[in-house]
Image (cartoon, rainbow over all chains, first blue to last red; front, side):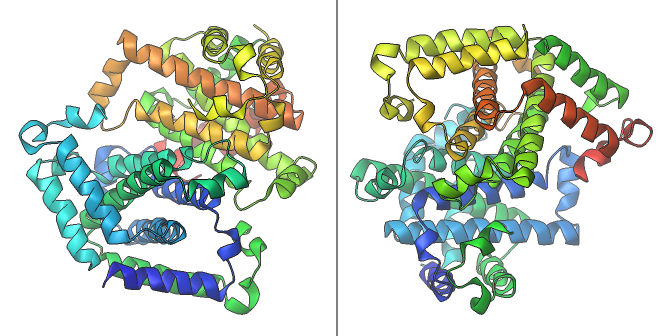
Length: 116
Length: 116
Length: 116
Length: 116
C-alpha cells in the first residue's frame, strides 16, 4: 500500500475524533517515545536466546505488532503536522546514511554503529 | 511510494553492509527508542509557542526530518525481522483503535488519550 | 538518610533474590529508561494546568512517587555495578554543570538549557 | 552524604540560575527520560562482552558517571517539586517491591522481572 494512503487513513482517524487540537509536535514526540518504550519493554531482561524465541511466540508477536503499529501511526501524524512527504523523509535519510556509512568501510563492522 | 518498496530499500542498505547479524529485535528496539528520544530532544524545555515556531524553522525542520527518518528506518527493519507486512500492521492497529476510541465517545476528548 | 545506606538496602534487596546475575549495565540502563518512561507517561497529553493539578492529586502523587522510586533504585544498582560512590557522582556532575552553566550567563535563561 | 544535603545542593544550583520557572513536572520528566536515554546509548549495539568491558574503560566510565549524575539531579529536582522526601520514596518503594517479589518466589528467577 502506498504510504501516503496509509497516512490518509491515520489522519482521517484523527480528524473523526477532532484530535488535531492535541497534536502539537512536542506531545506527539512524547507519545512516539512512549510507544517505542513499550516496544522495548517486550525485550526487557531477556537474553538473546529468549529474544529470538519471541519471534515465534504468537502472543509476543501480537504485542510487538501492536506497539510497532502505534510507533508508525504517531510518526505518520508527526509527518503530517510538519507537512513532510513520508517517502521523501525515508529516501533522504537513506541517502545521508549512504554517505555516513559507505559500504566499503561499514561492511560487517559493528563499530561503525557505535561511533554515531 | 509503496511502503514495501521503501522497506526493500532499507533492507538492501542493511544487507550491503552485512548488518543483519546485529539486527536482533532487542537491539533494534533500543535503537528505535534512542532515535525517538533524539526527536523528543528537539522540543526539550520548549513551551508551546516555541514548539510551534519549530515548524517554520528550516534547521529544526531538517533535524526533525532526520530523526523521523531514523525512526521509520528502524521500524521497517523491525517489521522485516518479524516478517510483518507494514501496511497490515498499521491497518490492524487502526482497527483496534477504532474499537478502543469510538468516535462518539472520543470526539474532542483528551481524556480518552490519558486513560490508555 | 545517607545515600550509601539507601544503596546498601537496595543491594541487600537484590542479593536476597540472587538477582546480581541479571544486573549487567545494559539491562540496568534499559530498565532505568523504561521507569523514566513510565514517569513521563503520567504527564502524557496533559497541558501545563493539568500538569500542575497532578501535584495535589493523591493518586497521581502516589504514581509519581512509585516511578521515581524505581528510577532511583535502578540508578543505585547501576552505581554499585560500576563501583561509583553516589554522592561523588552527584557532586562531580554539579561541578561540571557549574562550569557549563555559569550563573551570570544562565540566570533565567531557558536558552542555556536547549543548547546542551 | 545525606541525600537531603545532596538535594539541597541541587536546589541551590537551580535557584542561583533562577530556573525554578522551567521546572514543571512534565518538562522535568522529559529531561530525566532524555538523560536515561543518553545513558542507554553508551551500551547501544554492544554485546554482553563489550558491555562488561565498559566497566573498566576510563572514558566510558566517565560518560556513564556523567549521565547517571544527570539522572540523579533531575530526579532530586522532581522530588523537590512534589515535596517528597527522597529517602522515604526509596524506602517505601523497597517495601512495595518486597511484597511484589517475595524472596522465596523471586530468588534467582528472571521471569519475575518480566512479568511486571
